[in-house]
Image (cartoon, rainbow, N blue to C red; front, side, top):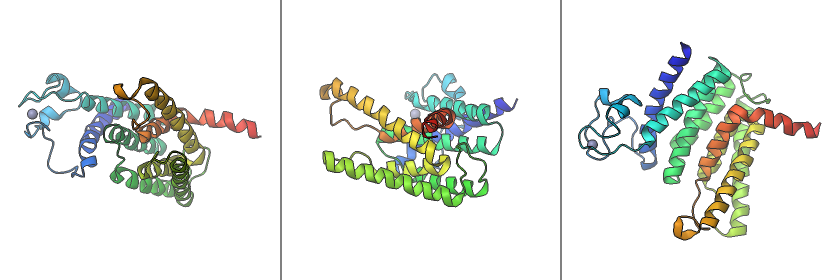
Length: 263
Ligand SMILES: [Zn+2]
């Protein structure tokens, strides 16, 4: 019964996330105007705005003009509901469960925006950092990592994570004379650190860099004439988001395994 509510909740938030993803990179308000078709501008009625269901009923087309609704819309709704359900199954109906659902929501939105626009809007990362710090202050014992996180340490880890990305960025710049990571990536890792603490954040960074490097090599092999090559820009932030989601659900055993070598 609770699981059904969690899924419905996830679908509703997924629907809202679609609005954020479509509007935030263009600096538009996420409140006004209400949902409308990006093609013909017709306001979408509440009945046609139900997550997944309406998309299926309308067979993926706008009722007014027949514009094909990108599969991203139902995909984000489905993904949000799945992540919320995973949080519930893994952490229960608890402070940590709600907390990780919020973080998954932010990470999913940032991953999609970075993939589509190569931007990680401050409208997600900065409130994300603040929420992580406030949460750590309110519920210092309820963290998924082994580390105790209070507001001060959450802010400290966030700052160190941003600094770490800046250092990597400078090294990369001196080595390649081009921008590897952006300021958005620094704020993103700071957000992850404020919620997950140091060990899971380091794991996220390592997994993200390895995954991005593998795809980078594939792109070079594919060659510039087929959309690859050395100059192809990778959405590094999206890799960090995916790695962070992995770290939330499966990271602690890896961290524990690694820590054994130092005992
Ligand atoms: Zn339309």
